[in-house]
View 1 (cartoon, rainbow, N blue to C red):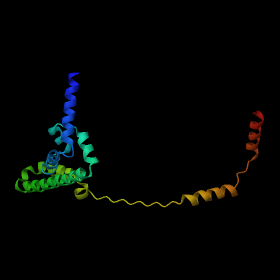
View 2: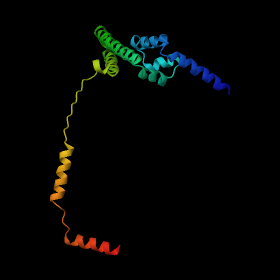
View 3: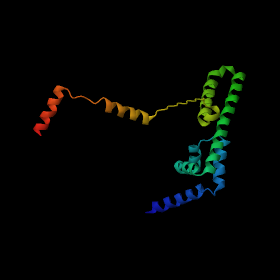
View 4: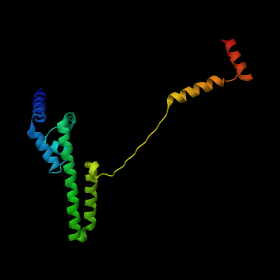
Length: 166
C-alpha cells in the first residue's frame, strides 16, 4: 500500500512537469536537443520522465511539435558542423585518418537520419495508375451475356445425375 502513494506522487510530479504551461521544462528540452545534440530518450532519462508521455505530448500539441522539429533540425546541423571539424582534424593529423573517416561517416549518417529533408538522400517516386473499373466491369458483363457458356455432353450428364440423386 505504501508504494502506491509514492507512485501517485511521482506521476503527479511528472504531469506537472509535462504540462504545456511549464515552459521551463519544454525550453530546457528544446535547448538540450537543438543546442547540445541530445536525443529525446537521453533527455528523458536525465529528467526522469517517461519517454512515451513526452513523445505523446510533442505529437499532440502543434506548437510543441513545431519547436521539436526545429530543435531536431538544429541537432542535425550540429552533426554537420562536427563533420566539418573532423575533416579539418584529418588534414592536421593524417595518421589517424581511418579513425576520423569512421567518425565522419557516423556523423553523416546521424545528420541524414535526424534531418532527412536537408541531409538525407533525395528519392522521388511518382506512380500514376489510371484504371476505369466501370468500363472493365461492363465489358466483362457484355462478354458473359454474348458468350454464354455451353454445357457439353459429359458435364450435362453429371448435372442430371446430381439432380436425380438429391
